[in-house]
Image 1 (cartoon, rainbow, N blue to C red):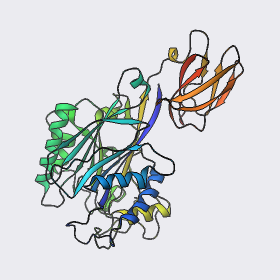
Image 2 (image 1 turned 90 degrees about the vertical axis):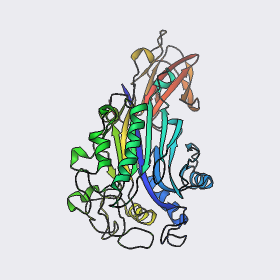
Image 3 (image 1 turned 45 degrees about the vertical axis):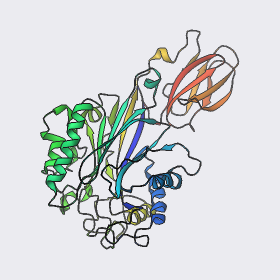
Image 4 (image 1 turned 180 degrees about the vertical axis):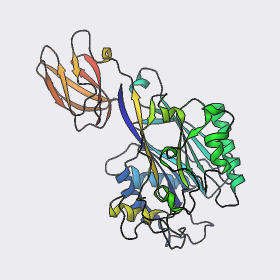
Length: 402
């Protein structure tokens, strides 16, 4: 068994690029330029492979600019997205951005819900299993539910639509449902139907924080201080105020991901609200410093949005048998997986080429026989192919010991 990781981040960007009809938000109070500066700092700190967002301005041009300004920078050219869908004609939408070196999108569905659509993104992972014809699927469902204590029934209706769709199409798949849920407590109908009460139990989701005390009546409750995601500030305009006192932002997993039954598994204790150190209940996240993140990151979180992003990590499991590493003629590479040095056994002097799953050559050189070592420590984690003369084998680079 070889493993790689995926880091997922969900972030409400607070009216990113939208100044239509949201009180107090303008270019001067919610500057896109300042937000972009902050997003680059946050992305560099978290380094997600999947970024899902809420409150993104509903224009294709904004999506293109976001990719160019914040993601495909400093030599990167692999971040992708999908065309926006906005059936409810909202000023703000949900959206997704992803590292195309690790995954691709196969489908984007927009569910008609109020007050804005829920977006369903079906992805597939670029792994050895894909090369062997076995697709590892990941479905990301992004929702921004209606805010307010008087909107519980609307939130329930939206999540009922989501659960009906999951039950019909993805009840036994790797699924994440994430977004700004605007829920004040775990007894709300929307939370209950996601995690407990929906009739098809195969479709139910798991809250990763349930096992660590994160589920309950979290609104304005200091007992849940380390789980709160809103608000980063105590003053406005445009930004919500009051300091951290609500758990609005979520990533929930299907039991397939939580238990790891479909080659993808939640890594225990990796779920977090970035920038929440548990010490800022009803306070700004930068008041008297922040113990959770470096100062430049807490300032970026403060400047960018009134929500904190939530993140989690998952293993992606790739089943590689010994027969896949050892050619019949004696060509052999080990250890496999490797963290830094790959040893090659071959009888004669030879040349080698190492390529990634996209066919791009990442290393090349020559070897002189048995027990020749190649330093692969600079390669990103993942599956690689090594060609020695006319023979090909596989190996996995991983930062983790197995």
